[in-house]
Image: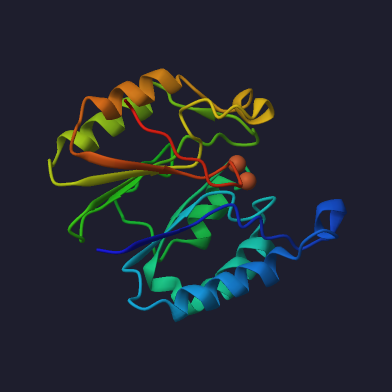
Length: 203
Ligand SMILES: [Fe+2]
Ligand SMILES: [Fe+2]
């Protein structure tokens, strides 16, 4: 099973100061072209949040348009720049019917590796929350099956050394790490938010 990841596309429908630096719609289009050219082709493409900059319907319309050639392989999760209700509407065709109600967390069970998506984003805020409800959801999702599992979420539950990122991360990150570590069949935790590749391990 081949898994690709895209993240933090930050699709916008206005320029702003950041927009003068990079056209995110054009950049994502190039990413889609690259993914389409990969041989062998990835089976799934995780999209780990901040898929739009402001979470508006107009921005989701642009996003879905750019992602159309790879839409059936996209496994989407919101980040702090997305807005839950509009995110759910935009990806209604890809989100399972049993997606959690109060957060957009869900499990994809149709591949050799189970994909467990944990949404810790909060409406109108830029930090994340791993509360008792999300902990219970994750515990149940990981206890349901002991096949090899990948957990994906927007906020990394570890310090990166990037102070401005670490100060506005996910709360109760230690509880999130502990929940995952109770389930050794979780082979990998994949996150977004950092806008750069950073890896760590649990050793
Ligand atoms: Fe981001
Ligand atoms: Fe983010």
